[in-house]
Length: 376
Ligand SMILES: Nc1ncnc2c1ncn2[C@@H]1O[C@H](COP(=O)(O)OP(=O)(O)OP(=O)(O)O)[C@@H](O)[C@H]1O
Ligand SMILES: [Mg+2]
Figure 1 (cartoon, rainbow, N blue to C red):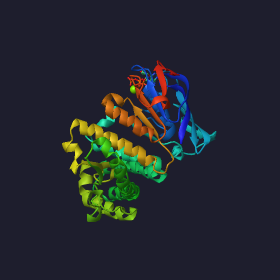
Figure 2: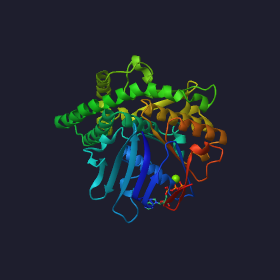
Figure 3: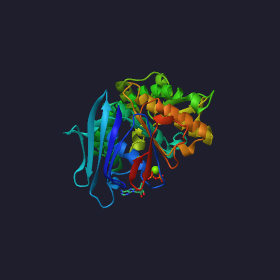
Figure 4: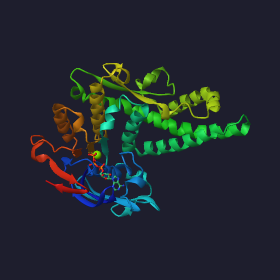
């Protein structure tokens, strides 16, 4: 799949934009604040119905307007379909595919897949576990609707269970309420963990393919680190993957063990919201031992691995690279451009124009200036 046309209406600093994209690399250059990231953000709405820049829907619409629209023509297997997402503060978000409204936003899964890469991601392996969970979640949510609904259910239930724990008093009624939420939490949470356990080795393999790019001779490997003790078989998530019901049993036992603690502290202490992804370089945890350059190159391998996993079925993925070249030396930047070219379509931004030698005539060059885009 690839995106042939992108339309933005009252989106960030675009009043109205209609853009024809190329199937390979699309390169957007322009000064700071001209609207480059906004274009990639628009594409993220077509794929996951939200901003991958991390903004709220209410902040994305052009100042002074009540909402925004994003549209695109997606080509899959030679056939074109038109996706339109509209947001207004009064109605919320609505998506249509070829004019047919989708019952739920999650029905958009799989229509268009994206991998987003921005300079903050260079801290992926160094920063907090939340960033690494987000990487797994974003990838799996685009591949698996069951994962998306389980994760959504888990987050909702976690909030409710935490409220119940906070309000807990030592009586039967309080215990009963917490128990009700525990059952649901385990059901959703064990699905999330089992799917992550199944996914991480696949992801690790894809990431290790980019090893030579990371640094010749280095090995990068990933392991899922679960806050639920999973027994020796799946120690550190490095062993066999587990069925959902096996995880559920262990999750239950773990919550049971912490139940007094949880009631005292007023929140849920174990579960996929506290898990992590260990990234190891030559067997050592990068987070603790990595140099700046090692973090940076590992992040690129992770992101390219993500794109490869999203494209594993050959359906294609759009790689969105926001302002990433300035982080890299020329050799790595050139290698990155070649590698993303291998996955089909990519949209890349930079304040500087792409070098003339890079990618030759296959690159579609655009210049962005104060909310206007022109193809060169
Ligand atoms: N909701 C909004 N309505 C109108 N303009 C907005 C809105 N949100 C952001 N802007 C403006 O849109 C412009 C473009 O932002 P964008 O982040 O796309 O720029 P950019 O080209 O990526 O810049 P940089 O090179 O600094 O990353 C900025 O000037 C910003 O102030
Ligand atoms: Mg930007």
